[in-house]
Image (cartoon, rainbow, N blue to C red):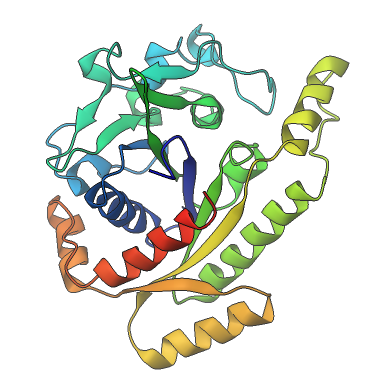
Amino acid sequence: MTLNGSKIACVGKGGAGKSTTLVLLAKALRHKGYNVAILDADSTNLGMHLALGIPSAPAPLISFLGGMVFQGGSVSCPVDDPSLIQDPVIDLLTLPSSFQAVSPDGIVLLQAGKLSDFGVGAGCDGPMVKVARDLQVRKGNEPYLLLFDFKAGLEDSSRGALVSMDQIVVVCDPSTAGLQTAITLQQVIRSQKTGAAPSTRHLEQVQMADLMIELFRQTKVKALHTVLSKVPDSETESYMLGELKKAGMNAICSVPNSPDLRSAWLRGKELPTNGTQQAMAQLVSACESFA
């Protein structure tokens, strides 16, 4: 399987439909035979486990990896300390069952951590971002395709969360903010790939600044795919495609504005795939072409 061992992130503005797209993509990849794991790296949004048909969310992986620095743990914010997490490779065979959950169709769910789990004054969620940046997953000798659901907007990308991703899916909803966020994310990734240096003036140690610059310089991203989401009609789709084209972007597919998907999120049910199979097949094919 060409994508096993790859890391694919799903990003976009708040409410754009990135979590929906991620779950549907995971289901399509799993149906095709891939070993699929999801890291829920959104420290504020809830309900990913329900969308996958899993009754209870797994324990926060950051606790397994050493805990947040703000609470005496070893995992720091990548903005203040870009060094890599020690032993970031997770073997599902030895990872305690409390830190992983499996959907009815065999998708493994991991959770970086939710700020709400750590109480008032927990600190920033930078350590969760570092978990996402460094994590790799396998099961014995079998590599897993790892999908990431990041927090809405641009913050995590500015923290360097995307430098280790192989491919990125940008989800764009029918709004000015949705279009602009998608365009800006593309610009951020392109600037990283062409050697734009991150901000390091706050780092007092030269070796830390050098490490951050090197991490950004080694950005792995091979491809950025744009997906239209919640599109109500062909006129809206045409307008969105035109605006993206002006920025040199093309959309891989369009996920319809489905009442069944909205109902599932509202009621905490597993997301249905009816009406989305063709779009997800196009996205899977696009991802495989860059494997």
